[in-house]
Image (tube, rainbow over all chains, first blue to last red; front, side):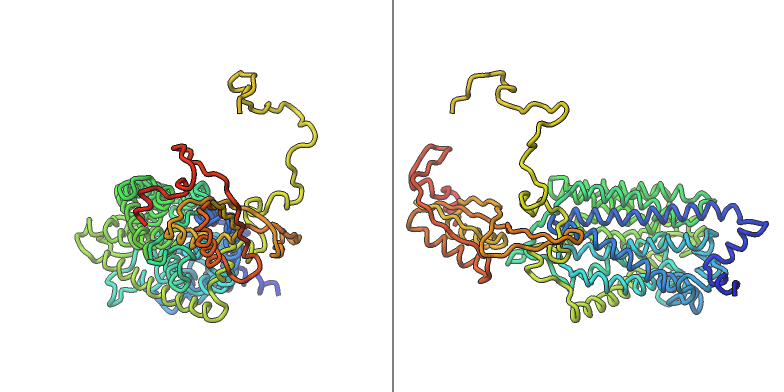
Length: 496
Length: 122
């Protein structure tokens, strides 16, 4: 009776070993701590996405973003636990298959290192729950990216339905193909002579999220007033650039968990180089966007500079474990230039309030392709994915670049079709978009019955506890009011 | 000279401004105001507790024109601000005694005219 539940415990083997005389290996301690710390850093990125999206929204929709990010995260947690992780990293029919099928509810899988992608995830001896948390945080990031294009007009119920489909099916299968031991990563098929290289998910996380965002946007349409009658785009400024800045810096910090944590291993010391490459990529993205926005607009667009950092970080995500230090600023600066021009081009036709299609989509594609250019042979060999001869600049061959392009194309097509189908069904059944009146009034007051910033929308006298000034003399030293006499020293009355 | 004061739904401003501009009335002032009329208050909830906001957001548009132009302006407002539902707002027309342009000191009806360049552009 006691044996049965013990077997279904996820870490049964690790637990047995820990309680035996032998104890756990020292590497298990340090690797588990490392992966868990990184999982928490990546979870912190939810705050970054929330601040970024809220900052780019108008004040009347500011509160909705808070409820949205918490709801999505929570739905994804249950779905990823139930089936997502098993689809993404479980053992399927063979190496390089289409879907994993073991480890539902993270139970009954035997040896964790053999059960979950033995040549990738399984190479790390960190306790399996830390890896689950880390991979779940990735899923939640990808889901958060989807909603960037849909701000200020999507129905709340659409979040719920798509979050279930995305975190249970679309993301797990897509990420299985790209970095969970699926056919794009391992299978040497007729389409791809070698496997795709994506260290931490430029394609698997960022492009998948942005592709979902594109599908949603195509069915949702622009915000009211975004395009004039003749189709000219108009700016709908977000309400808080300081929040955008805060969100961007939180994302930067989270990204050290995202990329450096993808080593899943602290004992070989590789993570420090990955972390430095991440920083060089992200900061170069800012410089790229700074140059592009100065040339294009003659001013330094605050939102664009922030998007430049995100684009640099997204682009460096795939190559962060594959390239040498010198390649990182090149990849980042190109992403920063790319994001500005792409955003201006997309804005002419598609209303993408935060620039997710450019910062996560275009930069994700560029980052994935950049592996095909700059992957160092020593790191291709170390990671054991893709062409061991390295990228174009080392090998002079297009083998890896071709594999990267094919991988991007296949992942995009799969996610786009799945997402478009899901959003199409949502649109036909429960509806995807709020009414015109709701959009005018703002999602906060209609869908949530309250405001993110009540004092901005409710006249102060109607809020309880309002007062027009102290009725009793204040305590302590209060600065005396500024009067013309206090400034000029004049005491006679100013003539009217 | 008359001053037209219109209280309208905020979202109807953009088409009104466009039409007035095209019709040659670029000079106007707006203020975001709150008020109540026949439209009912809005019930909100804050962490489970209900409360009603009686003052609804409205936009006040002020525009001073020659007597003969009053109808053009009021019709423009009526056409664009009317949804047929309670809460569309009201228009008031007030007499104006004098108008003085501060920059030049000129006074009278010519003050109400748009700037030369803007007029030729229309």
